Each structure stands twice: as structure tokens, then as C-alpha cells.
Length: 513
Ligand code: BES
Ligand code: MN
Ligand code: ZN
Image (tube, rainbow, N blue to C red; front, side, top):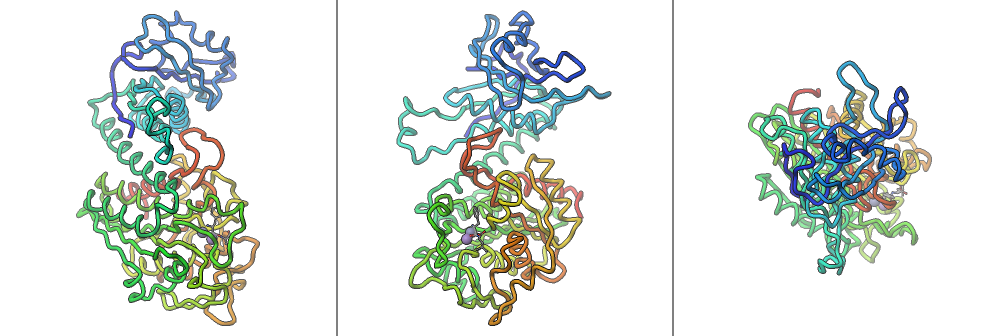
């Protein structure tokens, strides 16, 4: 885990392996060329005020994601200057015109990744307030992430490029309460978010439902969260037909984990429910080759919920948060659920399983019905639920569905605030009849068109009467198969963690509902 400090040192005075400065594309009213961002004044001075022209000579433009490394001039204690592009310079407004926090997060992430193998970097990016410092810290700590646990080279320090070990943020006020609080917040959040990434990246032969439940138990103990794990026996006793039906084909049995974080000052109660399919082969409706290689990521919803509950506890948020992890492995075998089987769900409803690859909605339905019994103020489920949502929104944006338009809008706004792209999606009532079953109350599949919304409509049937509910389909952004960008690495991304945490913070502050 990368260490984090705030420092009042000048950018040229701090002993570090590199000093990071920001550059931007000048706004049109000026020359339109590269400009050095605030925070880098001392470094620019060490370059005799020529940093911008030196960088332009090297071909830099200030564009987002751009990295230029150059040797530092004498007068600068760090041997390397790393200039990172912030994108367009903000328009000057009456109150100065600041860089967007998301631009700061992304640039810090890009810089931290480019500095893998270095020990310490000083970040001399523009800081106007505690929020800016927090954004730079968050971007750097998320961008520095790498998953090397299974690489032989990671054991050999000569071969491995270890993640950047220490981040010093300059330009802030280390003794100021708001800055201190930001550092605390970012440290807890990024540590738990990176742990969610680790869980997603861990191969499915090492992370089965039981192993995931054990990780949750250990973390819960450490952070004063009450934890309860239902194993197969308990699930059978409780009548969790959905979770059991999905787990029936696997040699590793399913689990339902309940994490309860309680705060004595809480006025509200949130329930987060995560899809935790540790591997989705499709079951008897087996996925073809080409569609199953990344299906270890099918527990990303549960990982996000887990991380969010632990973060809420570590931050001591004044809200009660219950996390439900619906864990199962979806495998074909002689004991697996068949297409045509009918499951009796926890809620009492029966479901005809027409496609065993539509398994996420089955485990979630049981967990949502169970979560409803405590009548929380809201339920939010998070799931890598449908390929259809990826077709609709691409690989970086998650879909939001809800039984309450205002709540859906709130979540969209909260996601926007933390830098997670999302989009509100409808739940058109006419798609419900496609799930009519001649044998059971409902089938687990409906029309192919609008498949993501069909899945949402299925879940809606299991939400307790009168309970506000939203569903986040993170199938696109949960796992990044392309190259890293901003503070997002390849592989598990930690999608939805920051949205859930901010939702809990806003709820604690009384800003929502
Ligand atoms: N886990 C998959 C959805 C998924 C696909 C997530 C690709 C991430 C990347 C889910 O269980 C699934 O298989 N959904 C089916 C549903 C269909 C059978 C109704 C799908 O989307 O094809
Ligand atoms: Mn599936
Ligand atoms: Zn799945």
C-alpha cells in the first residue's frame, strides 16, 4: 500500500525520486499552447521560467493522460520532473477558475502509474482547497495500484517494478482540519477499494464463496462490523432457493454474508446487496469459449459492497449500513440446476430457470428479499448483471435502474461527483410479460431486446413493499480488459465503491431523502 503525506515543502526542496507537475492546454483566449499549472512555480523557476517551452520542444501539449519525463535542473532536489497532462485549462472565472477534481484525480493516477519502481514522488499539482488535495491523493493511490501476487517476477525485486511507495502532496495545509480529514478519508477509501480490486483479480480457483466469506469475516472483526455467514446448511434451512440453485453445480458451496455496520448516531439505514458469483461458467447453459475467460470478475458487485461497508465503518459514518454478499459459483455438473428447473425463492415466489447463465438475478433476488425484512430506508444492489448493459453503455459507464425516479437521479449525481460515469435507465413495464412462465410465477429470462432492463424488472419483484431500491449494472466498468487509463488499472477496477461510499456519506449528512 502506497503511503501518503501532506507537505509544505517547496517542490524544489523535497527529497524525492521525482516531482510531478501539471501541464494543460492553454485556453483559446491565450496562445492555445501548453501552460504550466499552478503548483509548479518553483520548478518552473528552476528551469529559468522556460519549463513550458522545454516541454513543447519535447512535443508535449498538455493533453489528458500525457506523460513527459525530463531531468530536473540544478536547484531541484528530485532528479526527475514528470509533467502530466491535465487537459484543457479551465476558463478563468471570477473566483479564479480551478481544475476539475476529476482532472486532478486522473492526472495524479497517470503520474503514479508512470512512476512505478520509484520510492517517493512529490506531487506539485494545483491545490486550492482540501478537496483538491484529496482528489490528487485519491488518484495517486488508485493509480499506483498493481496486481502482481501471481507473478514470479514480483518475488524478485530486480525484475519487479514495485508500485510507487510514497506520495507527498504539496500545496496543502497539513495542520488544517479539513485537509487532515481528507487524508484520512482517502487512505481508508483507497485501501478498501484496492482490496476490492484484489478480490476481483484473484483467480477463481483461489477465491471461491467460502474463501470470500472468510476474507469478509476477518475484515469485519478488524473494523468492528458484525458479520454473519450462512453456509449451505443454513441456506437450506432458511429456504434460499435462488442462491442454492445457482450454487448447486459447484464443488464449492454458496454463502450469504451479512455485514452490519451500526453507528449510534445514525438516523438512516442503507442496505447494499452485491452479486458475488466467484466464477460464472454459465452453468448447464454453458458460455462458449471467448465469453468465460474474464468471468472471475462476476463477484465485483459483492466486492464493491464489501469495500463500501468497511470504508463506512473505518470512517465512522453516522449511518447504519448493512452489506449482503450473495456468493456462489455457477458451474455445470450432475448436481447443477437445469434449464427447466423451478426454484422456490426465499421470498416464496417460484422461478422457472430457462437459462442457467441468468444466475445473478437469482442470487440477488434472495438477498434483496432478505435485506427487505429489515425495512432499510433504501436498498442498492450492485451487479455485473448483463452483457446487454455493456452493449447499451460501453465499458466505462454503469446503468442505474430504480423503483423511485428521485433516488435514481440522486445516485446518478453522487456517481458523477466521485468521477464514476453512470446513466439512468428505465424499467419499462411492458417488458415484464416476456418473463411470464407457464409453470412458475416468473421465468429468469425474458425478451432479448432490453436485456439489462428485463433483469432489472426481475429484481424489482423481490424488493419488499414500499422500500426504495436502485440497481447498478456494472457489467461494463467492473473489469477493464483494455489498457489502463487515468487512475483505472487493467483488470478489476473497484467500480461502484466510491459511489456507494459517497451515498452513505450523503445519507449520513442528511442530504438524501
Ligand atoms: N455475468 C454475466 C453478465 C456479464 C457478461 C458480465 C459479460 C460481465 C461481462 C451474466 O450472468 C450473464 O451471463 N448474463 C446473461 C443473461 C442472459 C442469459 C439472459 C447475458 O447477459 O447474456
Ligand atoms: Mn451468467
Ligand atoms: Zn453472471
